[in-house]
Length: 285
Image (cartoon, rainbow, N blue to C red):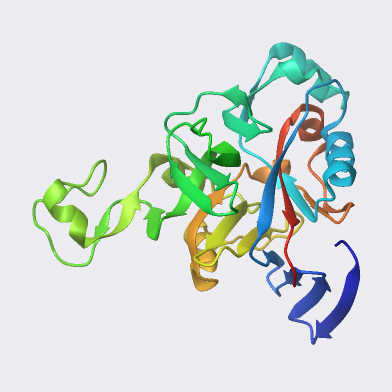
């Protein structure tokens, strides 16, 4: 339930706001960390008509009583969509092609993304993360593809394959040799490498712990402090996430908390976005 029940200001380093079963922390490096108790439902937010995405988000928040909404994966845009974005005007939903599928209410939206990753939730609230296109699985309640890997099923992703011992003939990029997979502690991923090279200060992602707790972590887009991609990933590790995936970064990032925008996407992105990830806690505190 979206009602602020407690607020604590701890010095200058951390602000903690408790909203029902949602905890919202702002750390001293302006890292925003939201945790939601187990039995949290993933609700994709999908724009299908000509309107700003912020309006789609606000309507979805009210319709599904969502606690948290963030932006989704990267997308491709038509020239017509670019024209709308230049004047901060509403673009047709068809002007944007999302990289990856969104699954909601038994329907797949978006496009193929076989080289990206997905997060999905089953009807029993359990979570599945994997590589490739989001499957149209009858046991899935919802899901989002086109995401970048940070941690998948306990395996960290990063720049190059890393092993827990010296292996003279190991593959340090690409597919590890079958006989070396037992020693692998970090899996190479080229998308991860590209994002780390870009070194954008605005980052956002979702992580899942072994007991089903959800962590949503965002780097404030209005500060100069830059968190490296490894440090961003390792924040999810510190909170016990067994899987974590990054959404689109830079000025695509927004955060809607209980119907209020704590962060807003850039005006051009607001014209073009069509996918977001919504979260609603369905259990008790």
